[in-house]
Image (cartoon, rainbow, N blue to C red; front, side):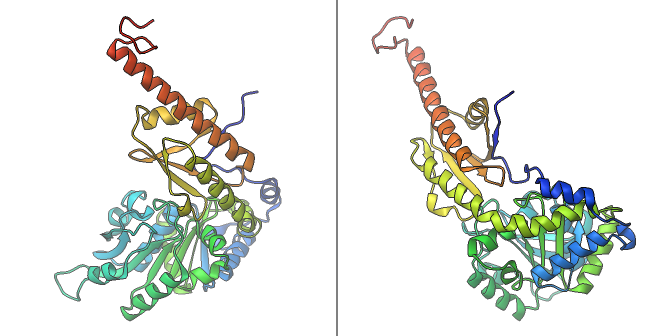
Length: 372
């Protein structure tokens, strides 16, 4: 048998647990387009209660969840405030503009994932016939491209206070909001109460095979429901999706601190490897970002070297690499990963030294003459 691969590319790579598979097999189902799937209805009620919202809706993906939320909040020609590192802006194919005629007003994210209040204040358009109407503020928690940063409850409270003075709704892309709750050691409702609406994924970190939820006021969810239908997201016997989703929000959410612990262990191990640049104090959830220091080893060569040792990560920017822990990554896997990174870095340096020796026409002992 081939050696097992330690796959740290994303927490979307998890397989459903045996309990999830059993629940899928046994799920009571009906036609969800008619509102008759009992398991979907139970999931939606559970999600609304956990988030402290009036209603919730199951959608196939987080991208659809964010898109339907934006379209439900905004009219054509409106503008949303969004971070320059936000998943909504960077990774969701410009859907709000392409399908809803909604413009993105991009604000630089702080390193901790926040949108600074003074920048938001400056970004709000005046009520004027020449200006797009600012109709929504979008935030992300945890923040993927900011290294899994967790927004503080103090920041969320101040953001809500500011938004309320502008009568501006807040939508949270909470794809990994259960990770944020685990990091802060609070119920997820303590986070969601600061925003008008929220989207969260069942398949990131929580290990469900598919699905995301949108939660908010009931009239808002009615609009999201219509947009879901228009975008082709109406599903039939979706109880087989909803059943593992309930296990995701309960059992799997309770163990996320294990992923956070493993992420910290990984960061600590990487910080001791010469050639790796990382601030181990900035790991707050299950995402670890680190930088390859200048060397002869390219990002592609580094990742290929890791894969040869049965460890996988992804490039996340120039010289930057991302690793994400999840339920199928053990502490032993972290030890394997640290050893693999150290080995690849060492091999890269050796390779670079030999290339320099050959280029200079030196022998391996440093004297002139043809290399042998």
